[in-house]
Image (tube, protein in one colour):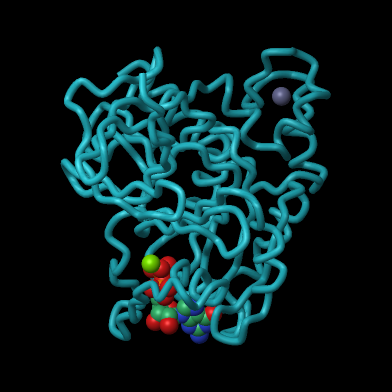
Length: 304
Ligand SMILES: Nc1nc2c(ncn2[C@@H]2O[C@H](COP(=O)(O)OP(=O)(O)O)[C@@H](O)[C@H]2O)c(=O)[nH]1
Ligand SMILES: [Mg+2]
Ligand SMILES: [Zn+2]
């Protein structure tokens, strides 16, 4: 067989995908009988997929998809099926605004869980720090104590942008978070050549407009890629069990290693070190209750 071209999917538009082949961005169709590796649940191409193309330019067609090294997956809103957001991502920058739109620690917890579940390294970025830190002061310490890496940034003043640029060099990094927090603005600050559209915040509602409508993968100057994603308002888990949830809460897991029962659910057992840590003020009660709520939710969706 002739040498097949290899590329990475940078955007998906229905029946067509944009694929970067070497230095060339091509918009090509994909075979109906696209070849997937075994066990792939969501057989739709996503950004970050590594693909093989058949045919000769300009009639190239995507023929085969390489096994995905990582998949960031959510439950498709309103459906009982998986929706992969991106493939082969190494790191996720979970972006929240420090003040407006009002940061949502419950959504932050969910996105962090999704990263751990996917085996993707999370970095928490509070952007718009030029507006102050009033929205995060009360609970940012919970995440510091949990051991997360936290970056205070401002796409407007460029604070933190140098550090962020160094952290993502050479990796494939997905930027996620609610709409209007400045994901696209941060990416533009990292590389002005992206010229990503930024939305304005509605003065009336304080909510962001969705200006980034589909995920797209962009090459970094030097090596590595970034993925700009549309805002998420909610995030449903896929393929996550209550027993696996603890591993997705590093602070709960650390305290839980001392529990009397190995299968402790940390809710009502005697000798529960997690509850003792909360009582002693060593584990954030907010993080603990977030863990318990998510656990309940997973038990319910499992049965349902
Ligand atoms: N004050 C301030 N505004 C910012 C900052 N970053 C982004 N914005 C503004 O916030 C709005 C939403 O930014 P955008 O990048 O589109 O957010 P996205 O939806 O997360 O991609 C735009 O009007 C930006 O100009 C920042 O660091 N400080
Ligand atoms: Mg955007
Ligand atoms: Zn326990």
